[in-house]
Each structure stands twice: as C-alpha cells, then as structure tokens.
Image 1 (cartoon, rainbow, N blue to C red):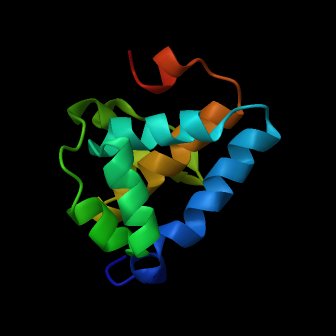
Image 2: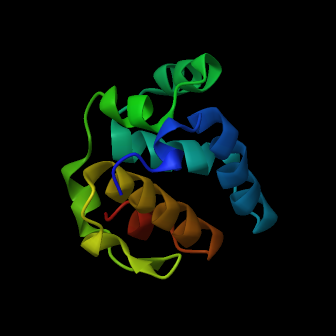
Length: 116
C-alpha cells in the first residue's frame, strides 16, 4: 500500500472523526487522546501541536516520540482487514489506531483497550 492517499492526509482532518465516533457512544475526547498518547508516546502538548500544525499521517507517526511496544498485541478486523496482517508499517499503525478507537466506541474499558 505504499503511497496510499491516507498517508498524505492531514491527521487533523481525521482526528475529529475519531472524537465524534467516541462521543457518539458516550466516550470522551480525553479518552481518544489517551489512546493516541499510549500508542505514540506523544504528550498532550505534543499531540495538540501536531494537530495544530496539520501534519500528515506519515509525519505524525514518523515523529512519534516512543511507539508503545504493546501496540503489537492489537488484533482484530478493521474495514474487513486483519490489523495484524497489514504489511505496510505505516498502514498498520493507522489501522491500530482505528481499532483502538473502535474498541473505545464499543464500550471496552480503558484497561483492556490499552492492553493493561
């Protein structure tokens, strides 16, 4: 999937959709931010700065301070594709995030979502 169009899409354009999906199911923006920080190692200030800067997905993940090794425990299907089977590393990171937000919207506890 090299060169997939989502790679060059601004993270800030998709972030509101993540938040809206969570809020529609009674969850919060703070929980979405916690998931993103857990996966990427960004602080809240760094996350806010990345969103404000309008960086694309490729830059967002490339500049992540400390990708959480436990993210590799994320399994399941997003958009009909098994996240653990996605070959492209960047697409896999995006799918991991999609799966975490899905789990939040489905009512899983934060402990389970964050593989605690």
